Image 1 (cartoon, rainbow, N blue to C red):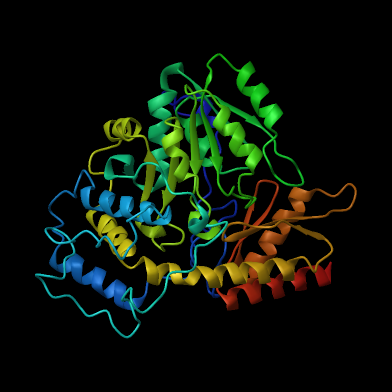
Image 2: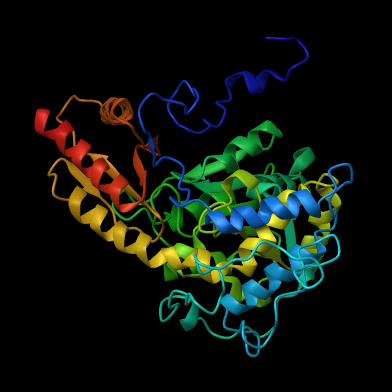
Length: 435
């Protein structure tokens, strides 16, 4: 190891990139690959929307100029979407027009763009999936409206996670708390910054946080003290949403602890805690355009929080952190959200079919899901290593063209297209029929 590199980094395992597996090799293959390992939406952007984006890139984006460093138009659009999702009074799509996307932007008023017809990209033709009780429509109306000052935008949520760590824990000022299994980047990013990670386990049957153990860990680790608690709602890789008890525990944490609630899968769970932010200035919600909005390649994430916290994130983030094309794509996605989110009912329906098919195998323990993926574990014989068995199944599926993720002591399968899901179930069936 080079002598100038910190010794603790030698023991750090890097995040394994797409398409999964230990080697991290390219996703190119001689066979068609069903990429069900990274929780992306199985559908690309509609062709006509991609054409409009391409036209915008050619005609409006100057590649020799830096992008909008303050993300002004995008923040306004995100704030409108968040308010709409909270069912805030007077903030529905009908009453507030989408911010004009002209000037260095996307406006169709002054410059003609390719028509978005046929595939029906107009918001009038495709209804929004019903977001009712237990989902967005059943959320109490917020006492305060989210504005652009409540929004911070990052190069993926990963950048926001890193900025939050720098803002709270760097220089020995604090440690972070996670309940494993969960999204590994919280711990990995903290470790790269020399920040200690305090962790406890979860209930092995429900994957709820062991609240008693969590509180003990926070109370006992005071050198340095825990400054951030990270949770995912719903959790990855286990797909369970936060329970009432877990939310009450988060609410009870003192204001000198930042609670980061990662809602990367919000559009699939239709469950958010954003309506409670006005009660908790020490809470921040992270979301992404990489999942339901189909923009994983663009790397756009955002945070919703108290203006003082978002202002701090603005100080820490790198300048011009989000390319013009990524900002444009995110604005397009929000403008066409009714079209893009119209596939969610299908994904939720396919999720139910996938769970039903997998539970037919006696050797598989499959958990309920509030996200766009399913988590399962294989029941092994005495003396047989579960981790070895999971790795073996992952590699067998990969050889047949299905990529899934081996993580958190189990297997995580992204809900794909109907055809992809059928192939996955058939291939898993073949594996167990032979064993």
